[in-house]
Amino acid sequence: MTERDSALSPTAGVGPWDGPVPHDHHFDPDLLERGDARNVVDRYRYWTEEAIANDLARRSHPFHVAVENWEHDFNIGSIVRTANAFAARGVHIVGRRRWNRRGAMVTDRYLPVHHHPNVAALAAWAEAEGVELLGIDNLPGAEPIETAEIPESVVLLFGQEGPGLTSQAQAACSRLLEITQYGSTRSLNAGAAAAIAMYAWATRHAPGQPDA
Image (cartoon, rainbow, N blue to C red; front, side):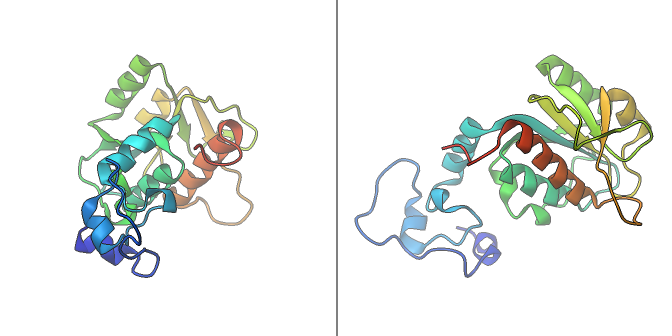
């Protein structure tokens, strides 16, 4: 366990394993001995990172999240963390390869994070996988996400904080969806918008309790 892991949640973890030490392959001997202070749900306490990632891959939902990264957007870490919470099949970074991982709270270790140099490369990947590419942005002609049909197998594409989806991204998407707003602000924070969109997907395709 690294110092970074320990610092994430100093009061939410568990101490050393109490009782006969289990020897199942998914347990981490070091965590069993020293305790587990990581930001993980109870089912994954004392598990190795590899075991957590493998189990999440087995239980992942058939949607992906993509975000444009032309100006080193600080919201990407938050989007990755939320994608992990909703068991997304993967996250796709479009543009700059480097992104600020601080907001991810180490969750990027547990799900695939892919890189595409441009929107065309992401669109080609989605076409090859047979996955629809939907853009999420408050733009003219966009459908309200609350009532729109959202495919089970889909990539939800978000633009950067501020400029939103680029014209190339808009053209690559089969449809655009918007989150209805009721106040005076022009737009939502990109991380918040991504969380709402993922929840909208879950209400259609993964209602109820988490998968076992």
